[in-house]
Image (tube, rainbow, N blue to C red; front, side, top):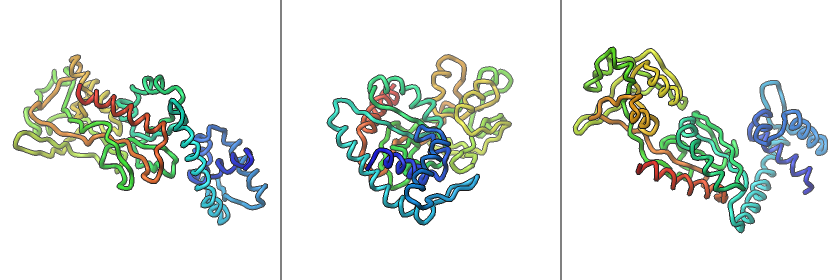
Length: 303
C-alpha cells in the first residue's frame, strides 16, 4: 500500500467513524478543506462515491459501508503491528488519546500531566474532557476515565482513585448571616448550590449517612450548574452551601476559605476508573499511563 493510499484510507475511516468532517479533521490534525480534498481524491481514484454530504450531516453510501468494513480491520492490524514493535523500545512511545469528565481533567489528571510527560517524553497525549456518555470505541480513544457506575459492562476497568467522601461546606461570609445547619434537614433553610448531571440531566438529592441513620434531602437554591468547578467557585464566593467531593475542597477547608458543616454526616461518590475496550491489546503508552496514575492516586488516597 502506497503512502498516499494509506493516508486516504485513514482519513476516510476517521470521517466514517465520526460522521463529521470537522471532528475527523481535528483528530487527524489537518484542516477541514485538506480532509475534504483527501476524501474527494480517494473517491475519484476509486471511481465511486463513498460519502453523502449535506451541510449538517455525513452518511456512508453502500460502497462506503463496504470499504469501512474492510478497511477498519486492516488499519487496526497496522496499529497492533506497530505496537508490537514498540514493546521492544526502552521507553513507551506513540500518541495516547483519552476521554474523561471535566472534574477528572481539572482536579485529578490535569495537575499530574507535567510529571507524566516529563517521565515519558516520547508519548504524545491528547485529552478530551466531556461529561456526556462518550463512546470511546467509535471516537477512537484509547481509554476513558469516569466514575464507576457510568462505565459499560464490556469494558476493562482499572480503579485509579477510591470512593471519595462528600463534604457539606460553606464560606465564612455566607455563614456570617445565618446559623450553620445542625442536621441535614436544616439545609431546607439554606441556599444550596446544586449540580445538574450532563449524564442524564437530573439534579440529584443530597444523601447523608451517620452512625445509625441515612437521609435523602431534596435541597433547593438559587443556582444550578453542570460543573464541579463552578460549584466550588460559587461556594467560595459566598452564594451558599455545597456538597462536594473532599478532594476538591480539602485545601480550602485547611486554609479557612471554607467551613466544613455537618461533620457527623457524610456521603460519598463512587471511585474513578480508567477503562478501555476488552478487545484491544493494551498499547505501551496506555500501560505506562495506568501505572503512573495508580501510583500517584494511591498517594492522594493515603495523604
